[in-house]
Length: 189
Length: 416
Ligand code: SF4
Ligand code: SF4
Image (cartoon, rainbow over all chains, first blue to last red; front, side):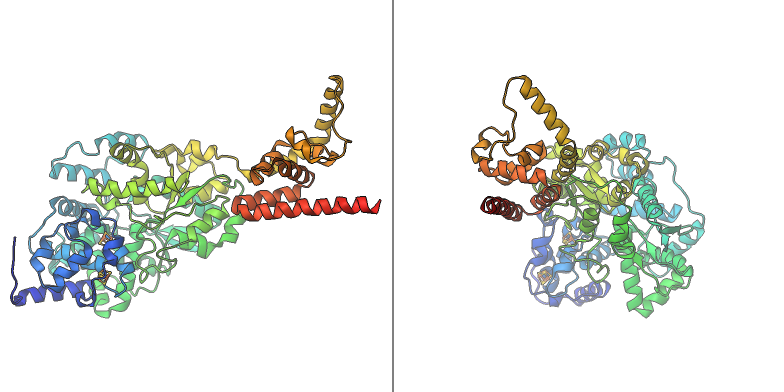
């Protein structure tokens, strides 16, 4: 989608400000040296490299940044943040972009979003993550029933999976926390 | 020392070896671990990709529970550790956020305690010397690639106990256990575990890069400090091998398994037999290296007089002139049978092998060195150790030994 931006709409500025606030960093600090991209282990698979994602934000092309695959490919490894000579917290910005995209209903990667949802549902329900339940539900939702099936039996034989989830003693407490976060306008469901 | 213990979801299931070996290591090294009662999941990547406040509240509940007891927390999983440290850091910096978090968890939380990684506890709180004192089965001959992973040392603001690009705490621990870690470049590179389920084509490639670098640098195994890294490198190794048409066959350990084993615990007891890539065979069959040869050589040297007498007797029977007694000649190197009595006594295989490694292209010199070394166990040990670390130095020292001996002989001759 081609887009020519003459004057950025004010809402875009608001979104950028929110992204900056949530990630505790400023996109204007970046001088486009590309060190973040050079060290990024996942850049090879991204449509916009980490440096380019920051550039999009500097140019206030927020839509483009929110629709990019990159934030969903980012593995949150913190290499970019550690190496940036200007102190830009690139990893947190990627994080903030994912959350912003969720909030606006733009989800480029349904697999990642579904995985996260399934994961948090389990935490809400049991307090802990039951790995078998997580993978089964995830594969069911994304219709890849036999993915990783070859690993299932060996795991079971090694006593590494429990077929039933464990529920923590004080589970009501964790449920309450989820409820309170939702009340304050969170996106945890 | 007493610490609150946060196992996290993985250590109870897929990473059961990590949990068991952490407890065992703590027991062996005299650390009391008190599991946080009713702990909940830290939320991992899923929470902070979804909601910032939730991603801080989930760890905060556990932190607050430990704070009540006035304890610092050991979180062996690098992902949990990272989320805990991020939470502490942000709550300490932002009073408004602290209030919000307290309301959500319904508990008091001041972030007065701190979360420790397994490396901090081992190398910092317990200390290398104390660990070294407990080692009864040194991991000699093991050449691991110490893999710290991405989250344990990055970003510095949260973690900060080791260098983010060239960390060395794990390498130091492994050296204390008797192993020889290799130098490699992927020690803090991300293994892509978080993408393995959702985007395998990306995740597996990242895993491949790490395995490849370890293999190229001559590692015989990988040591990890994170259940996600271990699972990814171990369980998915066969997937990676299939995808890229290569063979790695690199066992992937947890540091705590190795500490426990080096301190005398049976490998099966800490779950080393439960790995996907066969680690049990590897740990039980570490190659014997130069250092071991020294020990053997010393043992053999002790037995040498008898062996020599037996040899001489056999030779005499065969009608040969018994070796020994003739003047030392450099030409004796042609047949490895040494000529001087001193050399004869120690013509042990170990010394010959060591000497021929040092003077690979000078047989005469090698034979002389073999003689000197076998006569003096201390010298042998020194050269062997040097060779393992720095060949050039070993050669220099060997040359010096030869010179010294020549001088001593010369003086004897002059004195006569
Ligand atoms: S490393 Fe920092 S300054 Fe350089 S391009 Fe990346 S974000 Fe910008
Ligand atoms: S945190 Fe994300 S963007 Fe940054 S280096 Fe790692 S994978 Fe790349």
